[in-house]
Image 1: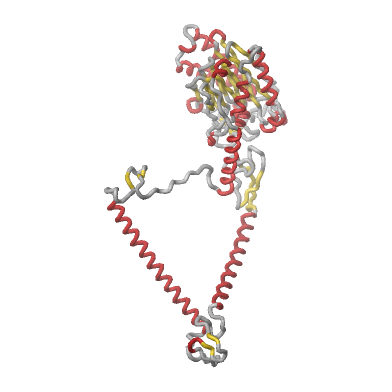
Image 2: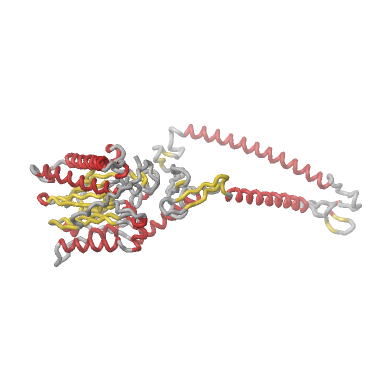
Length: 522
């Protein structure tokens, strides 16, 4: 089940909450360093929530299991249109951490973390997610509120400084940096086809939506974030989840070891620096949703790992190319990135797709068929050519007949009865000038009369075409009898739908629009 984040646009209605249930308590810690692992996290209220007098609906927290050197962390984003989703996000984060801590400590009594099988860790994560879902249902029953009021996402991670396990549902995400210098988004954003919709933890079948996994390569650091932040530095799936690395770099390398400073002091400065950046007006103008980030690194592995290479200039060039593709899609109707079939190669080159030579002298198996098809096609084309030639002769005869009618018949080569002058040998006996053989003896204008007539016909056609085109433009520009409006859920702009432009995509930002008078998207 998909659930719309926008105020008042949800697929399943939520009851109005008249009672004030307050806000959840903040986490005990916002940053901490234990051995080689440093971590900080924060959830900040977005400007759109401030304008609507809504609390911060994000929640994040982390815990250490010191005896095993393990870090467990979780983030959640409450669905914006759900009145009590801030309590839902708090409940799922707290519950998933409690279950993970209890189950992992039980396993660590008999074995090391590296000795625990991956399927066992996966089962623990799944159990934690199920109990988190049940906890929200119990909370809804306790408060006598509809369950949809508490909908939220959930993303959790288990990290030992190298190996990273994760569980995930919703449109949040985890971006990791590997020891080999690469970085990637390891989770899938569970968004619906409609703009601004999400698949929350409490809706849908777990086997279809919930995602559990392990990163196969050694991880030196990772960044968890809700969609408000994630969508700003990680592109969508259509653009291969491209990552703007400077944002990830700042989040991770700010916790790298510094000479003369303790781990606690370094991670505190990193936390304060990230908080300062996220509070800047320039950033808040781009991200109006609640903001959650949780970053963790293995400081020793991070310093010795390969540093990723990233070019801001190349990124800007790719962004500009993408904008041009969007413009092409909006104004020409051609899909972005549409592939066209390659032109076939002929001659002695090998046709890789067919697995045979296209040279008729070398292709012994298909040469006969090729000759037969060629002869048939040639005969067919010749027949079409003869038919067109016959039509041309017929039109020429009609043209000659009309010419004779306009000139009054064939002109006697010796005497023009009406003018009384001889045209023998092309000479005008009275003027001593040669007459043009192709000239009309009555008018002295010859073929110029035809030219004038043809120009007149062309002029009439052009005037008629311009008039028809003008009427068509006016028809397309006029609104429909029943005016319809659409709007862009991303930038908020509204457009009036006309016969000439349905505005299925926003001309400003390229997002898919939505009708104002219906509940369905395009």
